[in-house]
Image (cartoon, rainbow, N blue to C red; front, side, top):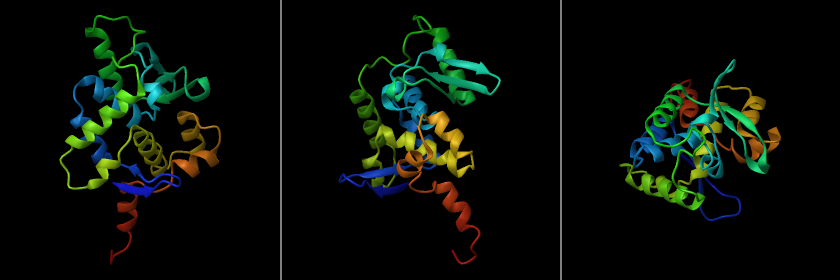
Length: 193
C-alpha cells in the first residue's frame, strides 16, 4: 500500500497493491459489494458510475469485453475493459436475479452508502497496516489507473478508458506514485536493496 498526503486535505491518497485489492474484494459483504468494489478497482469507475451499472452494459466487442459507461463525469459516454471474471459474475447475477437486464447491479442509490461499504470492508481486512483507515472508493479508481500505467498501458488509452479529458489531469491526480508491484520490480534491479 502506498500513501501520499492530499494537497488540500488532512487525509491520505491510497494506492493498493493487487494483493490488497484481492483482500478488499474478499472482505466485501456479499456479491453486490464485491461487484461494486471490482468496478472501481478493476474497471476504474467513479462511485456515481457504479450505481448506474446494469448487466446490459457488459458487451463483447472487437477490443474484448467492455463495460459501457453511459453517464460518466459530465454525462460523457466511454467504454472501459472489464475483466473476464467480473463480466462472468455480472452475467451470472443477471441470469439468477428477478430483474430486467437494464436494472442496476447494486441496490443502493447513494454514493454515501458506497463509501460506507468501502470503509466497512477496509475495516474487516486483517492487516497491521493502518493505511486501510484512509481508503476511500475513489482510491480504487486511483489504484486501477496506476496499475495500468505501471503495466505500460499507453497513457492516452488509460485516459480514454478512464474518461479523463487530458493526460495532464491523469498524471497530476491519479498517477501520483508507482504501484507497489512496479516499485518491487524496480527494487529487484538493485542488489543492495
